[in-house]
Image (tube, rainbow, N blue to C red):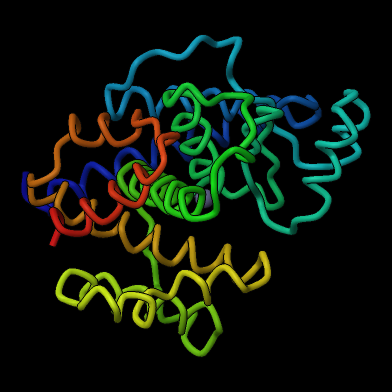
Length: 263
Ligand SMILES: [Zn+2]
């Protein structure tokens, strides 16, 4: 399908979604769970767009945009603490809650994509703690890639990596891109020298999180490019988003495999 057609479709679906969300917000201005109902709409849209397996409505996440509202609804304190520590929107699989810091549609769709991803992998309400660091790192990158791709198809979204230039995360991101190019041809004894993982894992959570997003969104952009050029199909995406990456090394192998394939 030509890229132009995709752009047209994207505009249409974007306008439709904005309209739906506005209508939902209007009629439910004072309803405390209005974001949860918009979340269900967005999840339905995601499942429909990519022809994904249905998800039981009772598994759909609760969506909050304030910590007070969580307290009012008796969300467990240990979960509230997790949301309080971060200043961005995110989906937390163990509590099955989307916390929206700023209720913008594209960020909202991204968190819904994360929910769909985790749910279809069979990981809903499970903790990430059993992942080792490297597996967790690449599994998160793949999740960001799928999410960014989904937001791009459904709502249109540009990723400008240059906005991160000059930051610690950007330097590590570039180190990783170099590693991706060189790891196959590098002698075994120089592997440690070119592998940036140790340096990345020394960083604090915010930097680590930025590196994950940079690598993930970049891969999402590539997936989108191939999708628009019909080299990556809906079926390929279904396979990616339903892949369970619990097994040791499966996340890094999937990541590097995609980088190769989508060259
Ligand atoms: Zn994300």
